[in-house]
Length: 343
Image 1 (cartoon, rainbow, N blue to C red):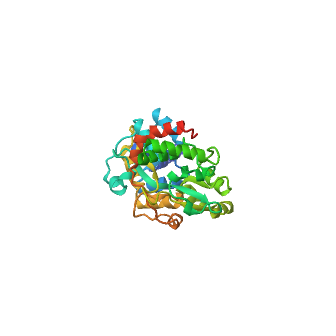
Image 2 (cartoon, rainbow, N blue to C red; image 1 turned 90 degrees about the horizontal axis):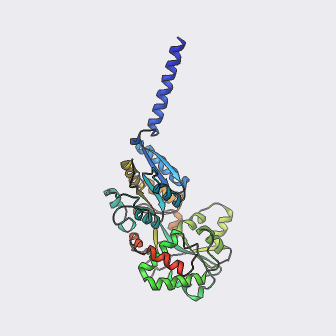
């Protein structure tokens, strides 16, 4: 009798475990998608949980810096989908032969062509602008105009910007080459380096803090970094936000640079259809609203509202340059930064 009870108990436990594994993906690849993400866990976890609720597909994910994820992929990692920030990272991954094309009408109809790869290797999920943040006690916004004007001698010792090795600035330099040509951009970068308030140090948030502290007058940063500070309930960050203003450059000509966070299905994806399903979910209204609220980014889908903070900054003219065009100028961008000693 005891043996029968023990056997029955073991069978019950096994059934529970099997049921749990099935619901959570387990070893059944038809119920799993593997994601490599350089986006912060507190953002993507919510999105992945919602996707699993909607589809029953479990999301296994690795969170790390892009360079670490790229190394894993080059060495046979199991990613089905890559999530990362900036078009440059997606372009470099494509050039490395690590991505696969996705022919999805859902993606092509929802995402404007300029925010996805021309050959459908990668797709934008959110937008961010490369804005100017200025110290209101030191700068009259009427003095600000374009990215190009930041090389003017009037800004000598007043510009704060992070390293040129950041993908955000590689993209910006490539963007300038696409608009102004190689020689004019080289002259511009020389001017930026001459006008730096200090050697590049830290990330975009550090540049914002430095402007508020009066270490420089103007910082070049991504919009969501300042929007996060602007929306913070922390007393220190509220004080910082009160000291600073936002400016969208190039509003009288070709528009402010708009970059993306994005995603791509990997070349060796074992769960390709699940990866495409997740990618399509990430441009759904539900997911886009989560992005907008949690990370202060602009939705890639045009009929989804931006956050109250971003709306308060007003409308702006954005560049029409397709981000896939940056690929043509990335090597030149690195060459210019090196020659002009933008560390």
